[in-house]
Amino acid sequence: MATYSLATEPRLRALEDIEREIGAILQNAGTVILELSKEKPNQRLLHRHAAAFRASVQHVEAELSAQIRYLTQVATGQPHEGSSYSSSKDCQMALQRVDYVRLKLSDMARTCEQMLEN
Image 1 (cartoon, helix red, strand yellow):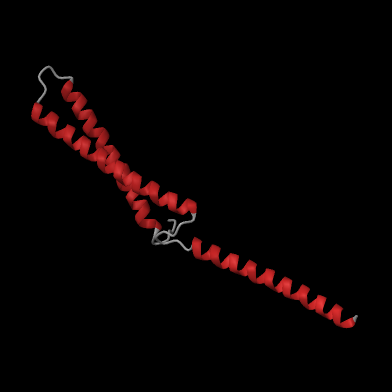
Image 2 (cartoon, rainbow, N blue to C red):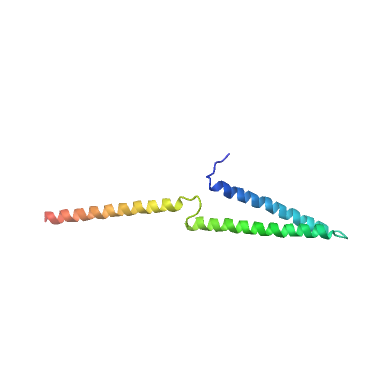
């Protein structure tokens, strides 16, 4: 069994819920089509399954939009729930600046020593 971070597990569960909801959408669509193919469709059953279909589609659309917004945040480096990428990147950049300052100070020290020798 793979282990995931605490922030990832709810995201995976949300995707599994979306997948189940898509199954329900297909089932409701199939029931509506089957009912429409009858000579005398049951209007109440037809309306109930059509309403369930619409509600499920709206729910899936909202959940997928939320997932896409989250992935957009992750991909663009914006802070998001459970991410240490931004902090890690900031730390890496700070270390590079420290190395650059050390290099420049070393160059300045060498230049000063050369000036004092002359």
